[in-house]
Image 1 (cartoon, helix red, strand yellow):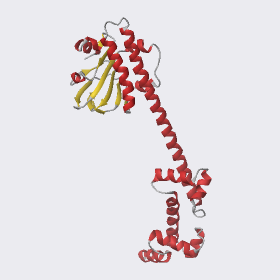
Image 2 (cartoon, rainbow, N blue to C red):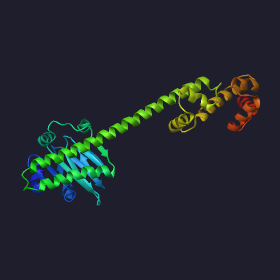
Image 3 (cartoon, rainbow, N blue to C red):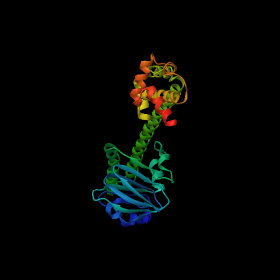
Image 4 (cartoon, rainbow, N blue to C red):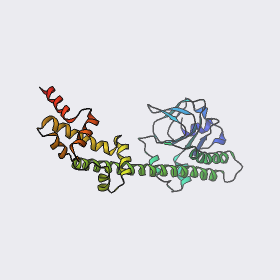
Length: 294
């Protein structure tokens, strides 16, 4: 059904012919199994969930969320949960243009991609802000005695669009900030790993690497833990162990020489470190590997 056909079916206090239709939570169940087409469809879901078919794609949408279906394909409402509370707003292009009067809500382009269906997750307070605008739109639509009924409807639709645009903009900025933090963490991690690969033999202390990166050891530890799931010291330790086992297995260097090459203060410290993390002394490890090789 088109917007005009729907306006003819629903009570007249729900819309303005050839302009806008607002389906409130009380009558939302009447959309079940109805197919809507050739108009923009806003869904504000404050409780429960619904399933809709957009073209050939099934979508399950839960609360609290705002959905903008600016699509060419028909939208069919397949199922509603028993606890669903949702609004369906169907403005046409003319009403939208008249209401906004050239004003573009913040980042409104993110609500105009015909290849995707934006679902904006909301907090309870954000849902309430949008519902207030729709409630005032509902009251204005029902007030036929008001000389400025059409203008008030445009005003509250404009308010709804501006509130939605504001939420989109804030969430976009929050995501951009999160991306910047993540990119910064990736940069720190890459730089740390490069330093470890270069200095692990001579520098075993995390403070050295934090200092070279001009950050605190605590911040470095937090980043490495978040990105790799282990501490900076564990990264350094793994490099030392890999090199130590390689030298013990393939070279003829003495344990003393390997200890010195890996910058341990004394051979006893190296042996203690090696046994703690492998369960074998360096000599036992070397003998074991040679026996296996033979």
